[in-house]
Image (cartoon, rainbow, N blue to C red):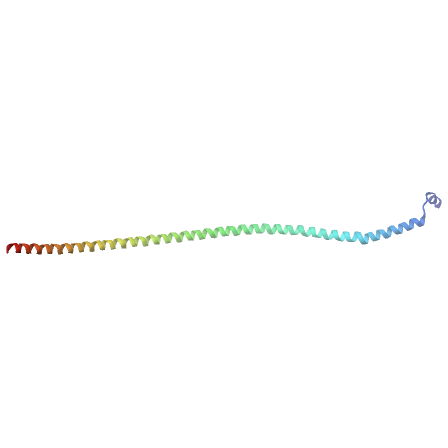
Length: 148
């Protein structure tokens, strides 16, 4: 068998040296390249998994925020409707109060106008009675003056 290996040019010492060199290179590559590469890949895999779970949580929070925003908008709409209803009710009450005051003032103004008209009529009657009395006195004086 040695002759066969010698015929093909196989040198056992060279093969053993190459096997030792290959083993050293294999150990060095495994230590300096494979382990750090696997560590980095595991970290990236964890980071991607964490990102996916964070995205899922963010989506859930977003859906919850949408629901909360919708409920707040609904509550705000309800509150606004209540405020508008109270404002309308208050405006109607104020309108009724102002109308009542206006009617009361109109009645007072009418009574005042009637009182002034009655007073003016009474004054005019007294003045006419005074004028009639004066004219009667003047007529009597003339009649007496004409008789004398």
